[in-house]
Amino acid sequence: MQRSELPYLCHMVDAVERLQSHLEGVDRTDFDSDLIRQDAVVRQLEILGEAAGRVSRSLAAASSEIPWAKITGMRHKLIHDYFFVDWDVVWVTATVEVPELLPKLRALIVRLEEATDSE
Image (cartoon, rainbow, N blue to C red; front, top):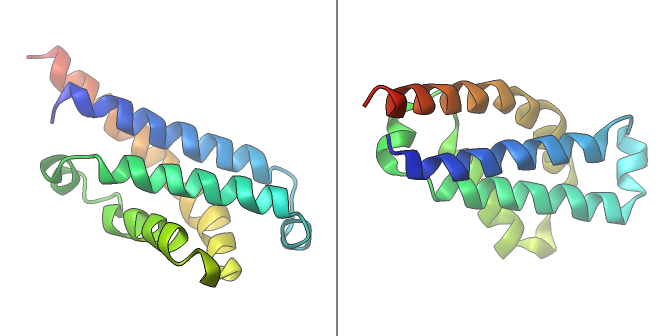
């Protein structure tokens, strides 16, 4: 693992935190009726996926608890198939899967920092 990957992991954490703030106190009905909120959530999912795609294969392999391919796949789907967005998938991803990702990313950052400090 290299320290140069730390910014991408931090971008991922930031994207998750922003996404969560966009959905704080929001239910599915509110989300479905708020195009600006939908755009904000999709943007953070795109950033999350873009940053995940910048992580090296070796780091991804060493942190298999994070679904790297699923994260980057979601980004590709949102960017390239934007006219076929499945809002059910976006909602579940944003409200169930992404929050589960945050502690894993934070733990990975700590491991990375500890590994570079010991070198």
